[in-house]
Length: 296
Image 1 (cartoon, one colour):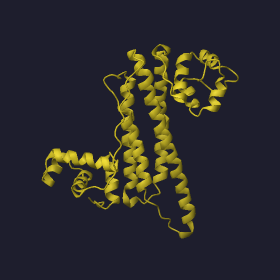
Image 2 (cartoon, one colour):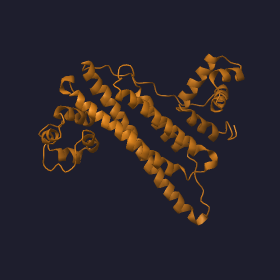
Image 3 (cartoon, rainbow, N blue to C red):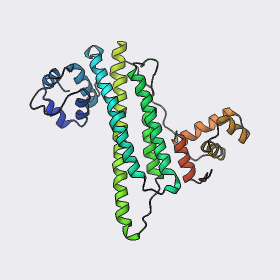
Image 4 (cartoon, helix red, strand yellow):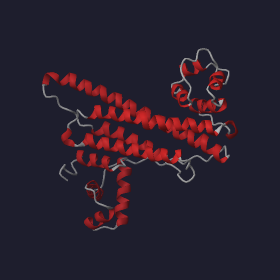
């Protein structure tokens, strides 16, 4: 466990997440041999709150509510929101474009992957707007649903990224190497962004919320059952085809002569089996598996 008398340079040198933490608390580089207490005091940061976040990130140690200064923690979270919206997510989008643009555009898959990403960003934007407005109780967010969207984007790239073809055979090896480097880089960025946002949500759930409510032992969310992958039935494929064509549940029921309840049930089974939740992701699956063609 880190203490206030520890040198902050040692923390920054040995903990991967420390640089992000100090920046979100408004601390800076060039700390010399100062202790955590000295640096926090010189920047007007509540030292116990700083240590609570550090030790939670490193050791998963939950602090007691009376250790936390709420304004300090809220500033930390607001700075994280700014980082995500104004820097990390736009940069990741540009990296994603660089990685997928060389892919075969006739498949439309690159554009659908980008649409999945944009849907994910809107989820985060809504999440952050609620929190910046202080609406924690009325907006019990499902942070796992949001991080699942990033996991889905990674899965779509891994499974369905359409390999590009160089115009000249002599350029093929070099061309594919460059694409591979881009993909490796963007996959690493996706993974780190997913983990960073998951940790951010955990700090809200395990530190901020208990402090606001005065309850130090907040009931943990139940883990959702993992999706069971498997082959789609013939009827599930029929429903999927209509979904990616843009039909509503009622329209699908009318076309297939089944009830709306049955449509909803089939859609739940489809997403559970494929572990794909977005329409863009389902469309990619349908195209790759030749359930629909591009004009459809």
